[in-house]
Length: 113
Image (cartoon, rainbow, N blue to C red):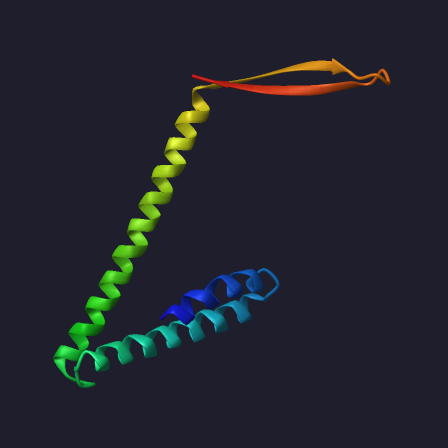
């Protein structure tokens, strides 16, 4: 499981250079590795492949992973909304400073309540 979490960021960087077909193949391979890891986890818990308990175990793992993903998404959205609210309460101003060589440099300042 940890190995998969370490590989995913590297795969994300590589996907920028991949064709849609290659991305689809990688997604399929990742899903297969995840399925195998989940099955290994359920076998480790003592469930036998093909039994209702094994299926329930796989479903619970899937449900927990989905809940974790939703929780992370909600946290990202919360941070985005907080940042948007913070920016809404800010005012951006600018001034110009004359440099010794006679050129002017624009200086921006942001004031937030």
